[in-house]
Image (cartoon, rainbow over all chains, first blue to last red; front, side):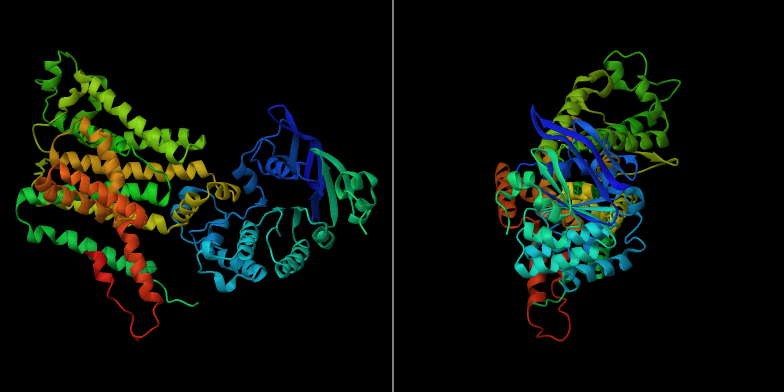
Length: 246
Length: 370
């Protein structure tokens, strides 16, 4: 059974149908890449899953619970972590403080007033810091990080949340070749312990990380399967790959 | 590039400066024996509390609140009503004179609870705080923020001022309420020009400052500072942003309400002028000049501006406002973190200098305690 199930999702903005009957089932401990040409509705789908937008119709269930009508913070608490396309970190806070905020096991404001650092934080911080390699940067203000480091920080923050599912929106955008290589190793390690959905344009990158690929076109489901199957699919070639890949 | 830690960010150093500040304000009654002067210093303490409350919600929470006079004014009215009823007698003289002048024959229902001193003071603190909870919930749930919230708070402030002005028979309109006797607590009159009144204000200022400092250092405080920069990110980490914003806004309102109560205790008077927009905007200017990201900076900003107003204002009259305006522009343009930010910059450049001195340089520290 899928950990996350999307059923017949529709979303229109003022008459324009952006998502048109999209369905998806994500299996536990796989990395699913969501691909499609510009305007296919990938980011809108992310927005709908995380509650930033509400669907016109359709349901989204997480481990059998309907989360469609919940607000962003409730969905996040239930274990969906999201990394934004444009890195969103707290630039005025230090890297360590960014991780502290992200460690959101306790979200009650009144209990957090009486507490400086929640239990279990240090162990989790060590784990995430060793994964993301920001050990020497913990006391630096996040605004001073390089673009690549900022991407890593945000991925680390999502991990601090301990999410059941990670949604990564173009995680390697703006990264250097070396950083992309590092991300590939990192994601392949991460998918052993986490379920991931990655929105990506770069097919070369998708090839190196994806267990399964879902192709979207015009807001609807087009194809789903292993990358080799997808690439062989004539409909996909037509709308997305444009020309046969060598 | 490795840097030594900026002394400005060292928690022990911060607490040491706070300690110095508390010691300084506690020592004032030893040197100042003139009652009027002591009363004036106590009033500065009230302004300090107001600036601190602005620093909490604007500086830390990013909520620009131009209507802090709502909590201050409502609480001041509550306290004035309490003190007024202390001078009335339930049997022989139950109705305050101004109501008789407005031909009221019964004490209005909402004045009844103020027969009790404890109940009255409690209401003076609880009603404004509850209003902040309700207003904050409405605004922040609808994700009203930034300049839009500032305008809403300002409009709400004007609405309250107009309401109080219009309800002449119940509030004495523009004349305000001037209780004939000082506050009587536990059977003794509290002389507003005496040291006890000063100590109460001083104790209140120390308590709210320590409380606010601890709050900003808690996990709650960290989340609030994070949502100042990027509320969306905080939301996607699982925090109910509107609830956090309402909390910090209501806490800041409670501090302003406490300030309102103490102010009437010192001045024995309240009028719609306490809900004047210029007064509330003034609080934001104190915090802005002193440093909205520094609680102590905001307090000292209030002392500086109000002190300047008292002494230079008399000398320069209207020119003082121009000087204040020019000063504010200079601070906003060159020191977005206020005078406290200037200190942070100076200490930061000391920390970056190659370690010529073996011992840490304490030169900048006493400057902050002044």
